[in-house]
Image (cartoon, rainbow, N blue to C red; front, side, top):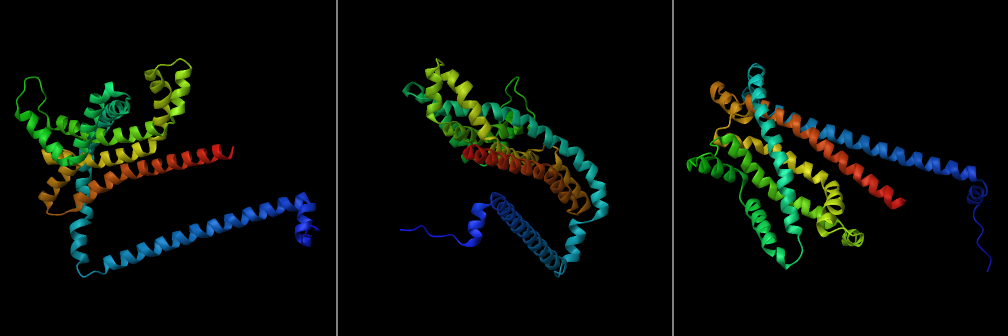
Length: 297
C-alpha cells in the first residue's frame, strides 16, 4: 500500500526546515495574541463590573448619609495618625506570634509524624491539641486566656492582656500551621527516608536533613496564607482591651459619631495583607513553573 502524499504546503514545510521554524514562530505569535486578547477582555469586564457597582451605590436613595458617615475626609485626616500609631501594636503582635508559631507548629507536626507504637502517646497528645484549638473559636480562646489566667493571680505569671492575647494566637494558629507542616512531611516520598537510612542516617537525622527541608520548602505558600489570616486576627485583641488599631478606631467612632476611622483601619490592614497575598501568588506560580520545567526535563 502506497503512503499518502502530503499536500503541497505540508510537503514544503517538511522539505524546508526554515519554513517549519517560521510556522512555529507564527503559531507562538498567535497564542500570544490570543492570550493578550483574553487579558484585555478580562480587564474590560472587570472595569465594567466595578463601574456598575459604583453607579448603583452612588445612586442609591441613602448614599449621601452613608457617605457622610463613612467617607468624611476631615475625620479621616484627624484619625489616621492615631490609628496608624496603634497599628504598630498589631504588627508587633503579628511578628512575635509568627516566630513562636513556626517553631511550635513544627514540633507538633513532627510529633504527629512519629512512627511506631512506642510514640502513640505523643501522637495522641498532638492530635488532641490540634483538634482542641482548631475547634474553639479564636475569640473565645483570647477571652479565656486574657481574662482567666490573670484572674488566677499566680505569682510570676504575666497579667498583661497583650501577652495572653499573643499566647492565644500562638496556640490557635500553631494547630493550623502544624497541619500544613504535616501535609508537607507526608508529601515527601518514603523512598527518600529509605535512601537516607541506607546511607547510615538515623530516623531523626533523616527527618532533619532530608524530610523537613523538602517539606518546609513545599508548604511556604500555604504558610503565608495562614499568616495573612493571623495578621487580620490581631484585631481580635481589642476585645480584651489591648490598645491596637481597631480599638483606637472604635474610640474615635464613639468620639465623633462617625464610622470613617473604621475605614482607616481597614485600609491599613489591606496595605499589609494584599502585598502578602500577591507574594504568595508569586511563590505558587514560581513553584508551578519549576515543577513543569522539571517534568519537561
